[in-house]
Amino acid sequence: MPELPEVETVRIGLEQSTIGRVITEIVFQQFADVMGGLSSTSANDRLSGQMILGVRRRAKYLIVDLDSDDALLIHLRMTGRLLVVPSAQPPIRFEHLAIVLDNGTDLRFGDQRKFGRVLLVDRGALVHLDSRLGFEPLGRGFTATVLHNGLRRRHGKLKNILLDQRFVAGLGNIYVDEALFRARLHPLRPASTITLEETRRLHRAIRIVLRQGIANQGTTFSSFENPYGEQGRNASRLQVYGKGRTGGDCPRCGNPLERLVVGGRGTTVCPTCQPRHGDHPPTPSPEIVGESLNSQRPASV
DNA sequence: CATTACCTGCAA
DNA sequence: TTGCAGGTAATG
Image (cartoon, rainbow, N blue to C red; front, side, top):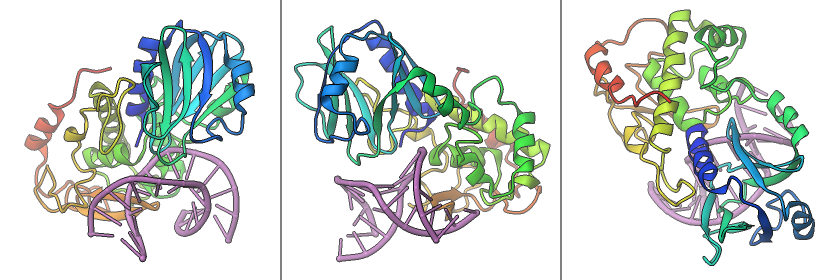
């Protein structure tokens, strides 16, 4: 389930191996609509001969800048994969598109569930994308103050708002649950009631879990891999995500984790450490254990 | 605001 | 056989 750290991991991988390469051919495979209805002929006409100038990320989108005014706008959604492989290699699993490059490698896009897209867009059109996305949570503009101001004027459940890409762009289900746990905030907490002190914890937690995810090259829960087919190492660093289903215990207080549905998504909380109402500190003092949690934090990105 | 559609593999 | 997984757009 690619979220910001996974998409960033893919971006870094693509940057290392595709910049300066020229597209020689586009080959459509299983899913004809992977480019949003663009035909194979049109895709080849417009893309062949174009050089890849850079690979950017905005929220969970990848933007491959080309040397005309074009860009490839890629979203992996749930199960999309991008791999760099030798051109002679047979199609990857669920391959929908092969972008043949001039150095004997292909950029291959596959997606079991066909939610993901590789769109050819005018680069100028990206401002519209940008305008409907909120803060980059690792960007300079995303401060605790900004987060606090945003949360207090929103009404709704904290988790829903953190998942809203128009507010903060790049968080998904995994990292929201992790950030809320680290900040000791309940996902159902009305966002407008969050205090500045709590917001500072949340802000810090968001940045820590995302940076840790990137440093570990993403969370491989089932199928995520980087463009070279390597799995992410972050799954073992998760504190709560995925443990609620299996009856796991809170890594901070040892009580059983709880599973609920928030905004239609499976959610794991510690009912003790993430009290639903109020600003009371969790019953067991988190300080000592909390230090060891923080010690997992990787070098800043 | 919440729910459904989009898809498919896999666990229950 | 059912339903869950979840990012986003569309719909109620």
